[in-house]
Image 1: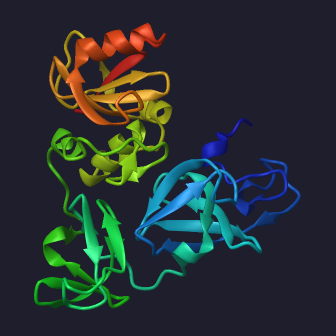
Image 2 (image 1 turned 90 degrees about the vertical axis):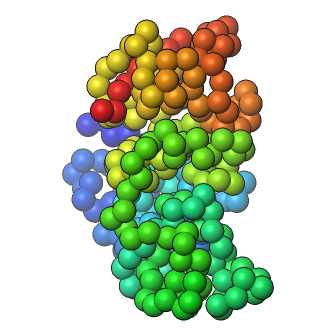
Amino acid sequence: MNFDPRITPARPDLAASHLRGKVKAERFAEGTMQEVIAGIAPLRKEPSHGAPLLTEALCGERITIYETDEEGWAWGQLESDNYVGWLPAVTLLAPEAPPTHKVTALRTLAFPGPSIKLPPVDGLPLGARIAVVRQDDSFAVTAAGLHVPARHLAPLDAVESDFVAVVERFAGVPYLWGGKSSLGLDCSGLVQVALTACGVKCPRDSDMQESALGKPASLAGLQSGDLIFWKGHVAIARGRNSMIHANAFHMAVAIEPVAEALARIGAAGSQVTSVRRLK
């Protein structure tokens, strides 16, 4: 059987126990559930700070860990989109209180007490999930004792209604391969974060998104919210003539005319592979 290595917890020396009999590995492990406690945790290809960034895990995400090495790196699979890779073990803890709220601002700050004059402990990106145990004036207090501005939070079941409006809030954010926050993100990360905010489950990479999302549409009939795909790239239509995407040409999330982008990308040797309509 052929498994996508991006979303299959299997290496020649170790694999998840549920893959026994399906893949070859020297040993198999059950795995233990952990939760991301840092605002953003890098998920890397190898256990090294210099290894390529595959994606990012946001605060509150769950991950099944199959191995933690002596250097403090943990190898596992994210629960949200099944991505597999290495994270710093210091960014993880065993789950305690279940998340109750999520961050709705592009980025908010977590303070050690009920004062904005205190030095922040961490930054929390859009989509981060936290367990709120009480209110302290304008702050929501987490199970860990951190104080987060309550106006930057919403209950877990709250969803955004306008996918494109969420995407547009990221305009000008730097391009970062593997990124998923306002500090930097890539084309498919932008789509995933925005759709997740709207309550739509979304795979991580653009080829996965092209296969899983929406129904076929056409360039000639572009509508706001349509996804335009090239090999290795995705953009979001804002209407028939305008689109927004995180891209390495601008090194940012940029809004530009569809015709201009098609011509530039086409001149580089890449043609549109499909257009997908979400609704």
